[in-house]
Image (cartoon, rainbow, N blue to C red):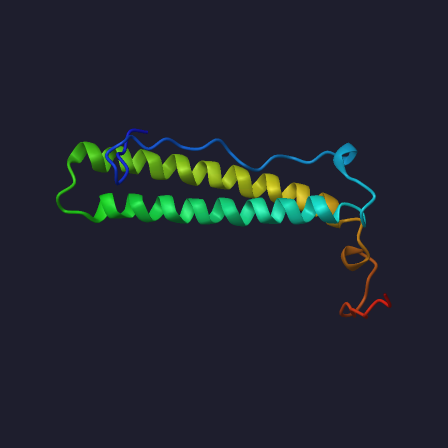
Length: 121
């Protein structure tokens, strides 16, 4: 993981941002809406971060002036980034599905499209 970034400093992978949510962490706010939204927000931020990193790495891989060492290092970084992304996506997927499984719109017995009605204030 020593691909230099645009400042010449080595690039280091950030630790995974996604984490599994346990049932004990859920609150009574509509059965985990806040937790669900936080997971979604974290996931989007993580995806944007990955996009920026992949763009930088693509620059190294496509640059004809990149040395073999830079290309090899960027290739390793891409593999690690994709592996971390896969872990984050699986974790968020599992947690978000666990939270939403209790919601009416996710009920296995629900038939037909979900109708959203305005709630009186």
